[in-house]
Image (spheres, helix red, strand yellow):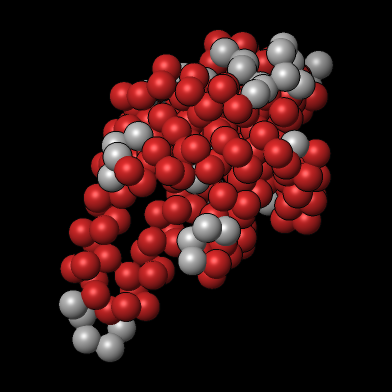
Length: 242
């Protein structure tokens, strides 16, 4: 009886091809270097926009944190993509176009992580370590969510799921990358919190470079699926005998 290798079937090759496309390489050095260069080239606008974003987020007790950071991402996308008019500080306020989903993303996940940290912190001995680990894991899995809301106009939940699915396939390298970028972004806390306006945009630039490398431009799902199907069919044609 002849057996069929599942890897040579149309479905098998399609799934292999899909996994290869989904499992993205984490380019630590390249992303960080390009992110720093993007920051240095646009230092003034990024720092001033971050100052306004941090102040408005703070005085509104986090209510405007979502749209403000969505605005910061619009600026970093504009500087990186170099399409259309050059971003200005005023571009920050275009983040209000994404108010609902950016608000839900920041508030819901922020509250969820706060509650989880409080509960885990009650566990003797390992509670604090477990709490820190959970926060870093959540940050890694969700780090592209707000980018998807801004760049592809995803709603809060689909953006969270898409970020989760992208990161989970190559989780540990992404976790390491997330930890490094969070440390970079948080260094400003040392200077009584004032330094955040200088370090947060560095983190935003690095993550913008990483996001664009991983997710590409604004390509429709139909086009992506069509390209994937055509590539899979080419693999099948090479395997099957003529």
